Image (cartoon, rainbow, N blue to C red; front, side, top):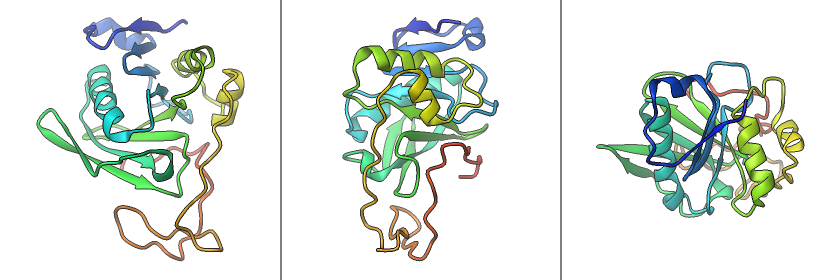
Length: 200
């Protein structure tokens, strides 16, 4: 099924939740069934790596699309610039948590209720053809595909993972923006096939 292209201001009808959607501004795709066993629930193609500029539009679009309230977003620290601790959104403050032991290719939104949503982040400088193919693919059923598999099918060049700055020589994590020092914690492989729990 081909995703429907929407503008940011297009109201969503009750029927829209039954079909894949792609929001063109921000450039976002979401699969209509979020409780399936897939590595991501959709994809997001930001215009830049500036988290302070990009995240407010993403929060508004996801809240509108899903009818949920985003409370927290988790990002990979070295993949973004200007990461704020909080972002104002419709009478609340959305907390932004950053980590250096997560998959740099995804972003996770956590809600007041319901399972988290994991989005594949398409690099901003990606050519339109591969980026749009990735948006359409992730709006469909990708169960059984890893992130690498999705990139291969969509013919999207792999985004090299930034080096883990601030780590010890043995690869253990040193610091995150919340929780203080995590020195000695075993380094985790990028969770390309694992979904975070609602309490993450």
